[in-house]
Length: 463
Ligand code: TRP
Image 1: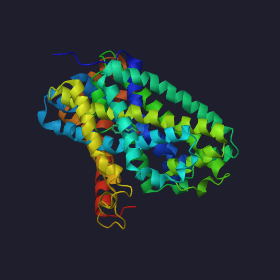
Image 2: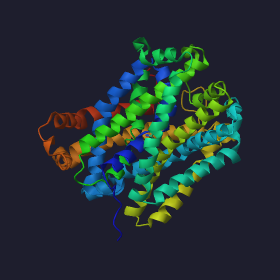
Image 3: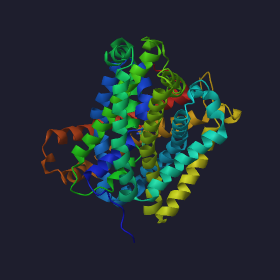
Image 4: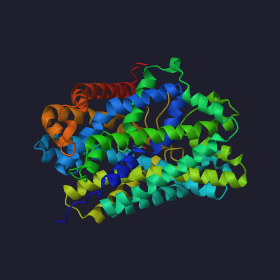
C-alpha cells in the first residue's frame, strides 16, 4: 500500500490548519456579527471562547488524528472503539453539506474578483440579479471547486501544504495592505472606534450564543477536519503550541478583517457606521460602492484585491472540507486518491446546485422549508447551513470531547499530547485541558446543540 501523506514540517501543518480555520467565516461573517453584537463586546467574547472553549477541542481532535494516523471514521476504530465511528461518519456528512453551500458563496466571491478587475462597480447594486444568473455564478462555483479538487488531488505535502504555504502568507500580506489603506480613508477613525469600543449593553444571550458558534465554526472544529490534518502530523510535533498558533492566527486574522472592514463602512456612511445593517449580503452589496468612490483605478485595485483575498481565504478552507471525505474514501474504502477527489468534488458540486438555485431562481428551493413557529421560509442554502454547521458541528464537538474524556480516557489523550511535549505532564495546561474536555466543553456544546435544535427548528424562544 502507498504510504499516507504527511506534512513536511511544523510550518506546513500550521499553515494548512490555519488556512482551514481562516475562511469566509472570518472575513465575510465575523465583521457583521461584530456589528450586530455590540462591537468590541462581541470581539472580546469571541476571543474568550476561542481560547477557553475551542482550544481544548482543537487539541483533542489533533491528538486523536495523530495517535491513529487515520481519517475521522477510521480513527475511532483504530483506537478500539468501532461503535463510536458514527462520530466520524457524521463529520464526513457535515463536510459534504458544508462544502456544498460554502463553495457557492466562495464562487460569488471569486466572481466578484473577476467583475471588479474589470471595473464593474455596479455589481453591488445588482447583487440579486448576479446570484440568480445561474450560468455565471454556477461557472464561478465550478472553477472554485476545480481549484479545490486540483490542490487536494496533489496530496498532503505536494498539494494542501504547498498551496497553504503560498496562499496564507499572501493573504496576510494583502490584508495588511488593505488595513493600512483603509486607515487612510476619511472617517476611518469613527469606524475603528465603533469596532474597538465595547457596547456591553448590546450583549444578550443571543449574542453570546452567536459568538460561540462563530468561534467554533471559524476554528473548523466538530467534524474531524483537524483529526484528518492531525493524522498527517509527525510525532515530535508539540500539539499544544501548534493548536495555540492556529487559534492565534485565526483570531488574529478575524481581528484584522474587522480593522479593514470598519473603516470601509465608516468611509461609505461618512461616519454613521451604526446605520449599516450587517447581514450576509453586506460585503457583496455594500462594499463595491465604497470601492467605486475611491476612484476608477484605485477602486479597481483595492476592490479586486479585497475579493481575491476573500477567495484565497475560502480556498484553503474548501480544501480542508474536501479532504475529510477524501481521506475517508482513501483510508476506509481503499479508493485511489485521484478518483476519490474528482468523484467527491463532482458529487458535492451537484449537491450545491439546489443552494445555487435557492436565491430566487427556483421558488421550490427559495422557499424550501418553514420551520415550526417561523414567519418566513428558509431557503435551501441556509437550511443546509443550519443542519451542516449550526447543528452537526456542536453535536460533533460534544461527542468528540465525551469520547475523549470518558471512552478513550484522559490518560491516553494526555499520553499522546506528551509525545512531542514532555513538559505537559503536571503543567497548568494539562489541568486545564483535563477540566475543559471532561466538563466544560461537553456541557457547553451539548447545551448549544439542544438550544439550536429547539430554537431553530421548533420555534422555542429562549432569547
Ligand atoms: N473555518 C472556516 C471558516 O471560517 C470554515 C471551515 C473550513 C470549517 N473547514 C471546516 C468549519 C471544517 C467547520 C469544519 O470559514
